[in-house]
Image (cartoon, rainbow, N blue to C red; front, top):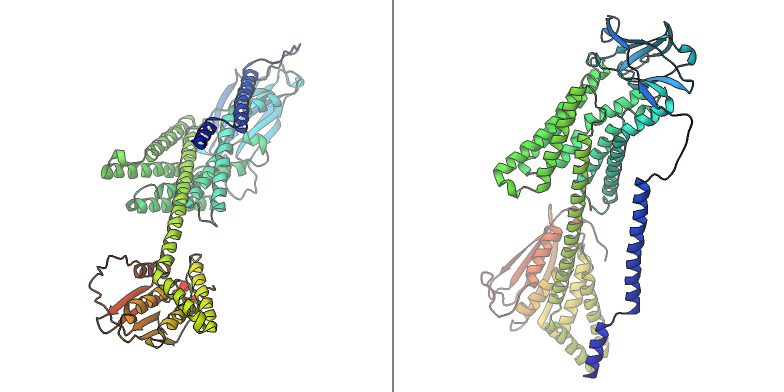
Length: 607
């Protein structure tokens, strides 16, 4: 009673270490809340005060200009667009004229004198566009009151009539202003690239262990392409890489051209196998259109910019394909049985693509369009998280199955070490200790080797060399021979050992033959073990001339007979082998093991 009381009291007490951990946790939470509150305050409060005699006006848009369109057959699109106005007061603080061009050439004149020009490089191998550029032309105080004339030459017909916004201000103010406008695209684009790289690294890291399927690779590559598309399509990007505007333009278009395939590959395995052909056809069509666009570009028939509508059509086709497949599954299995992720993802992506494509053709440009990027990024993150979670769960299930398999192997081993054999072997050794000590020593050595062989089989997930399995059988039979002496005759008819077989395959069959066949015969009998090689298989045959049994009848002796069943199961699972039993009462039993000539059965596994 006293001991129980002490135990009961001690369970109610909290150890000093646990108290300290609780106190540390509480104070850590309080400190974290204080730090978070300070950051929030600093984020919303004005923390400095400044005074300045001069004001930074930033930049302003030019107003009051005139614009006219002039027909010119010598230009790529057949027209020139001219903007002209007279300058007012020009501040000496580094003021410049700035405007953004999309596949347009430009010349700037001050009172008829050309001070700047932008044209496509004559040696340009692919296309005829100078890309998307920021034009920054310094203006001096002496330019005040002079006429500024900006001549814009569109490269493509689709660019005709595109309004050019003319800005006046310092280079820094224009730079920071455009950076602020493009910041949402930059942040989300970088996030998409980062997420994609993480998924791809997780895929490559899991290749060795085969933990992650190609789903992560498809999602990761699509996410990287999605992010690069938006990062290279912002108005701020030309400031970062001013000398490569054509390269940036083609990167942006290329991501649209090739981005649909990994997206379709990912969606493919989210639906029923019957729809796989649809997604494969979508991938083939996407690749074919990509090749067509490249060929038209290489042979200067149509630039990628002029075939952009093809990329948009393929993107919309992807969404329609996923939507149609979802509709088919809805009709087949019902709306409630379709995963929420599939329904939400398709709807989200469809809305995003539709909004961005519509806005592009209404505005005439893709600047500031984030619907597609946001919708697909959300889909990628959610899908990636679900995919990783499913693989974690799958790995847990595999570990559980491995544990079950290990337990099964233990059961198999224990089923082979029959109690009657242990008792009989120990009794034999006991008897030999007085009659024949040398023979007793050999019996102990054989018995030890037998037990060691059974235990070693637990560590095996692959077949062993037949020669090693045969050695184990011989050890068992040597112990039985000591018991039965002349009543047990053993014949080894071995023609080949150059193949593999699951461990503990022959031994339980041999033991079954000795115990149930020969041991019950009045004068014992002969056990024969043979091996043969044929054109497409190996065969191991175990024959005894014991009492035999009726193979059509199940034994009703109240005992479980799982040993031979386990042998047949492991033969098939590990080597695709088969086992046939032929027996007849009074005429003995014959067991035939057939092993197909496959790579894993040909290889010799050392013990």
